[in-house]
Length: 128
Image (cartoon, rainbow, N blue to C red; front, side):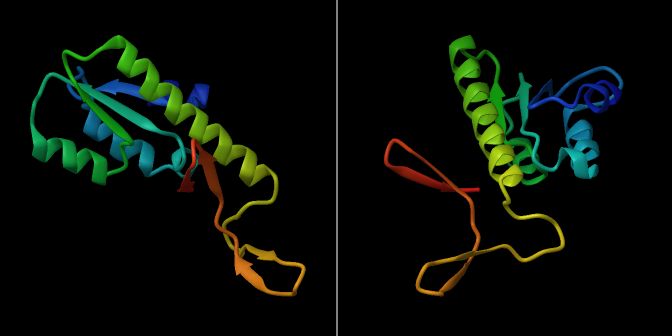
């Protein structure tokens, strides 16, 4: 936990079973800190437990891989999550939603729409 606070990573990759603090405890602790709201968390585990997987995803993990896993798949998942986080960071720095204010977009015809950032890739749009 202290290392994550010190380094401010773009992504946290951790095992579910670790000495001292489990991956689910780490996930809850990170999600309790506002500076980690948008940092993706990926958990690795040898447990093939669907209930645990769903619980961790509901508690804020973005992904969950069961061992053994393909290193190539892990790199692809991590790369996608880091790309998405960096896109969110750019959108927020460019005037995206900030806590405490209701963001909006003003069209030339005067219509005001709530601001909802989106990322489009390969013909698919993802709401951020």
